[in-house]
Length: 84
Image (cartoon, rainbow, N blue to C red):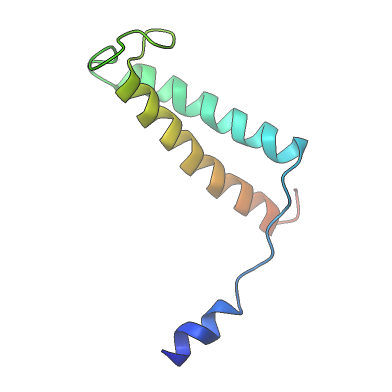
């Protein structure tokens, strides 16, 4: 238990939300959207087919979730090397 508490103090500082962080997140979501349009086999399945540019609600939620996961990694990585 003590090692878990000790590791909590090693968490690096994260950047505050701003225009640069928003641009990185938007770019990552656009990349994920482009990947999703090519990879998802049935993009308009489920409730609300064709909700956003031919993607149904499940595909849209999956693509944006992937985009945010990629975005978090990109933002933390860019902040760690000092770009953001």
